[in-house]
Amino acid sequence: MMRFLFLFLFSLGLLLNGSAFELPGQSTQLIVGTAASWDSSWVDLAFYERQPGGAWQSTGFQWKGRLGKNGLVWGRGLNPVPQGTRMKTEGDRRAPAGVFDLGGAWGYAPEIQRAPSLNYVQVTSRDLWFEDPQSPLYNQYMRIDHEPRSPEEKKAQMKQGDYAHSLKLFIAHNAYPRIQPGGGSSIFFHIWRNGGNSTTFGCTTMAEENLRRLIASITPERRPLYVLLPKAEYDRYRAEWKLP
Image (cartoon, rainbow, N blue to C red):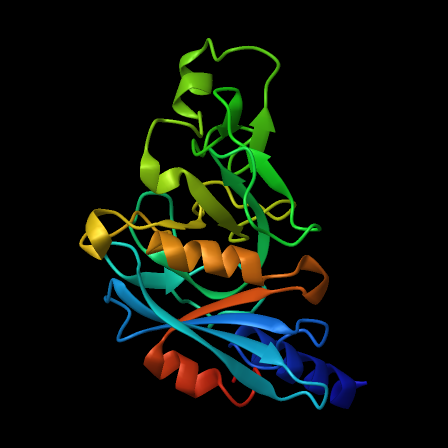
């Protein structure tokens, strides 16, 4: 019994310290983002696909992006994180690091180039995304049946006349049903500002043509993932997480 308990606690310790994890086997598309350090706001992005034998192969699609003004911090995704580490919080201007599923796309246009199975919502004035940690709908999307009236509804409007947000793809950080209030909300891939000269509040941004190509390339049935890490952390976890 004591030996079983020791092995259980040892395995739990590995999990909590970032080990005993690897990318889900059903995931065969992967976007990898590596930054120079935890404090870097630039990211190198690359697209990979898993081959029948299990090996990741580059598609040749590589591009630059921008991150939060203050760099990165561990986020709430699929992977465990080291014990006692700092985690993303609302308003810290850091992009969440880790391994994340991808959700649907939102945009101003009636339609975009995409896989038929990728959910796309044409954003109207009635489409809301809640970023207030006090809201019971924190980090959730809702389309209401009336024009926004309350200050909360108006603040949550996704369509604010901002071209940088005219096309976006959801990164499932701190996502439903395991939402931590104040743990960071509204994390997307979207169009960068000022030709890449502006940082973000925590999203990953890129040139519009690269975003459109990314969205057109992913297929939900292949469970595409986003891995975002500083380069040193990527090298540390590469073998055990089975990264490219």
